[in-house]
Length: 267
Image (cartoon, rainbow, N blue to C red; front, top):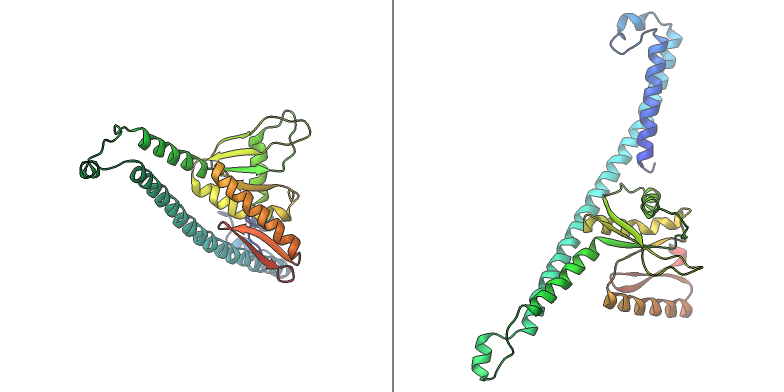
């Protein structure tokens, strides 16, 4: 069976109900009063019914626990992968700062060797590089929700929570959520969401495809891209549309900055 948080609530409810039934049958009010003497007063048929119900609950909940164990192992693996990816992103950001400084500034030794005048060395370039990295760090904690109808008086936070529920995702702390861009009649603006940690955004984006099997099938998520990243993504989208026209027998998608495909018959 597929594990979900709801299955745990169901298991708890069924166990509690069965316990109440046993206590009522044994004519006691608590488990502290339930003992050999109280059970010996019950008929053989009554004890048989209780035993069979408990065995049935045991088998059912054992399967739930097994499914939960598999799910936990899967989440652990995903968490490790996301942490590795996050570390790679951090390393890339550090490299980008170092590269910016190297390409924009000359060492005093170079200036002396070439015997040329150099523009005054200031912290402007470094500040710009750090500002860029900070912007990327902030974007890594954000994602966009597209395709949700915009209504007067809506609360974006509640829309985000609904998306989390559809993805069976335990909501991280939401720092902020709001519609972006200018409001235009007849169009629904995207919702920008900021969470506390980049890993939360990565995990949610990874699960986003599951929305297609819910009543939010027209809703999709995307990273919070800067202008350069968005331009590169638009090129990939254009390429994917061309590939769809040339060979509509496949499903196409963008992953790791590449257009990939799978046969529809195998999906």
